[in-house]
Each structure stands twice: as structure tokens, then as C-alpha cells.
Image 1: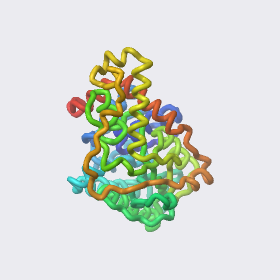
Image 2: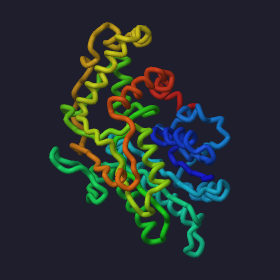
Image 3: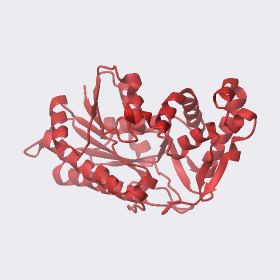
Image 4: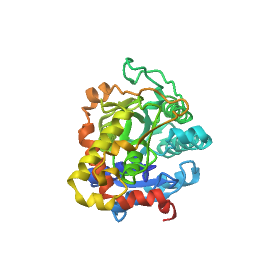
Length: 360
């Protein structure tokens, strides 16, 4: 039986990981530590809140006293560190919070793990600190460049990616200096249930359903590699079970799409759903598809953001070769599951858009 501390476990990827872990590891204890800032939401864990193996603690990863208490009280032997400020646009307008959470918060967590697990340089058996990072630390690729590998030099271009790069370096340093048993994963863009609707895919979905413009930066030519969120959870599981201590594993979907093609694909998928399901036309009367018009007419090109990276792509050869991991979902199957989740969970995203979840 493992005792996991999952930081940021009420956020998008963290919450999906909590659901996944409770399903797949029936004996394990899961402690979620989340500050419940704008992207953290109790409702993301509502379906498992009565599970006796789950405990939600509202608090900051930078709270040293709280961390020390949790490691001791819960007997934590595994940390899965998702907690981070992650929206690039927000990092451009307000970088301070990204440094505080992503850099100083990660350092506080590393110190707490070292204090709890090390005795005169001897480490407890079976402990692991897994750090969840991003492909954005590698910078930007040109169209013909090879995909990011684990050996690609770091070249972050936004305050967000710079803060994540700093946290990656701290995790590496704690392993090489002190011997802390760590692994790191750098993942491509995730999508799926509980995705906060400021990011591309959920923003396009909820705007389309309400008949609002679909804002696309520039001409939508920027390219991203996309991975269904449950595949990301499976990858982290594989790293925790079979990954080599001290190693970094890139996790990707081998699935590059231009932003404009993603948006058009979503529009076409909504067109089909509305044609197939009459109840959608009554539920979302402002969506063009409710009137038999193409959703694509809502696309609106807007001024590109500052420092917008051109292309991200992940070379996932290492995790496939060493750990046998490959995504179970194609983009076509994963995006259908995502669209259907948002259609079935209107109450969740309405609550997020209204800000009511912050008052729960």
C-alpha cells in the first residue's frame, strides 16, 4: 500500500490522475493538497469525495509547516507534483505568482520530502518524488525541426515556461546533490474532462455552445502535440512503477495539429452532434448548429499573443522503449470523448464560468 501526496489534485490533470489512481490502485491512500486557486475546483473530485482512501487538504505547497505535518501524519511515501500556475497568458500579465508557486513552492516540497525521507543521508526504501513538467521548457520548434527529446537543451520563452524550467532544475539538483529519489515527466498539451475553460479546446467548446466568437491567435498556424489526459495518467503510472530514478521521460501523443485545424475539427464535430441529437438544439439555442448553420462561422482571428511559440512536438521514444507506454487514444477518439463529456456536464462548466465554484 502506497501513501500518495498529489499536489494540485483538484486541478485539471491532477484531478484526472486522482480518479485514475483510485480506480487502478485499490489499496492505496491518496492525499490531495490543493490551494483551490482559480483553476482548482472541489467539484473535480465530487464523484470520489466519499471515498475513504481520499483526503483533500486545502493549503499551499509553500507552507513548510503544513507539508511537514502531512508527511508525518499520513506517512507519505510518494509525491506526484502537479501543482503549478500554467496559463501562458496569465504569466505574461502577472509573472510573480508563477515564480512563487512553480519555483518557490516546488523547492518547499523538495525540502519537505528530503526532511521526511532522509536520515543522515540514508533514504527510506520505496519513496519517490515525481515532478510533472511541460514540453514548453524546451522552447519553440520550426516546422522541420526534430521533436523535443529528453536531451534537448532548455530554451523557455515565457515566464510560465521559465518557471517550470527552474522547477525541473531544482528537482534534478535535489537528486544529484542529496540523492532524493526523483523522476520527471515533460508532457505535451493535454485535453479531456475537467479542463479549465481558458485553454484552447474547452474555450472553443463552451463559446461555440453559447454562440460566442471562437478567438484564434494570429492565423492559427501554431502547432501543438496533443495527448488525452487519461493517457498522461497512464504514463505517470508507468514511470512510478518502472521508471528509473533520476530519469526524465518525455510524454507525447505523436499527434501534431495546427490550432486552426483543432478548432475546425471541433466545429465539425459539434455540427454532427447537433444534427444527431435534437435535445442539443433546445439546450443550446445560441449555437449556430441549433439553427442548422456551421459552427465554424464563429471563428474570429485575433492579435497574436506576445512570445507565442511556433511549434511543440515530443519525441516519446524513450518512454515507449523503456516502459512500454503508448497512448491508448488517438486524437479523433479522445476529442469525441471530450466533447461528449462537456455536453453531458454543462453544470460543471457553467459553474466554472460563473465563478460559483470559487464560493463553494
